[in-house]
Length: 226
Image: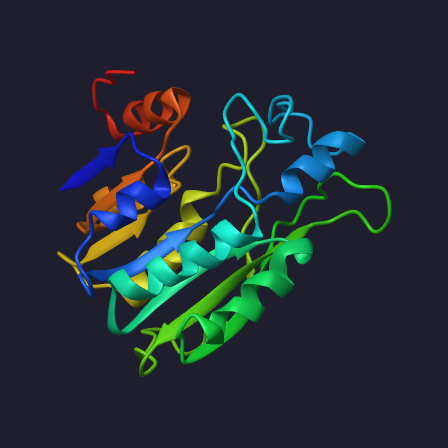
């Protein structure tokens, strides 16, 4: 079952019952996107509003909303399960700082090596962080040989911030079983629900963008209403 809802992420998470989710994997639109947009290193994400919130496809969340997001992630996640939240070096300190305070028992930054260089001025970035958050005991990973630096080539010319299916598959396959429930409250291009469809997992997620719903439904082979 694939459930794509057109709701604000927080409104969507409020509809989920406590400890009802087996895995969360998400890549929130952080407030730092506005900074990079202003200096010209993130050109594909639309313009800025009067409130310094991005318009177009991405409306960013601020540090307070990140805290609220992580509290909700902890609430809906089952015991002895994992959440994974993507971030860059600018927001990593916030995610790590909130991790223990919001209730997670263990957290570890993983590195996604994107192989190709991204944009930037000094030491151009070719990586992002994926922070693993444990609620309770660590659920044993299936392949114990996996390193904490994951090398998967980045996509080019896709939906903004679209992640490779091969990257998402690692987490879906390693940390869930068939029929379990995966959540992404910012599903964007639909890579997480596509991985769930391919791997026979239940997906529940949300995005407020019509473009995200159109892109995700096209990739899932579903007639889009947006």
